[in-house]
Amino acid sequence: MKSHALKPMWQQWAWQFRAECSGCSAEVFFPSEVDQENPRRRAANARAAKLICQRCPVVRQCLHHALTVPERFGVWGGLTPQERLRIAP
Figure (cartoon, rainbow, N blue to C red):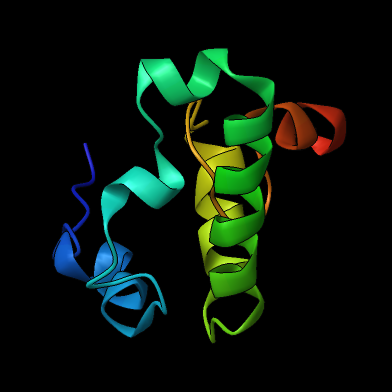
């Protein structure tokens, strides 16, 4: 049986160190249940997160990650969970 060398895990996540959102409050990307239940707050949170994503140098890697895992919650790669469902393979 042939063995394969494992790659260090940090290489899979290194893109996150360059993300525009690093250092931002997670609440922007993952709103509380109270905010999720209020349509206006939910939309405002999504807009705020997407503005950050628009400036992000690794937005494509982030979206790829979200679609691959798949991430079920929060804004990833500039898209909400509902938006990601529409483009998921």
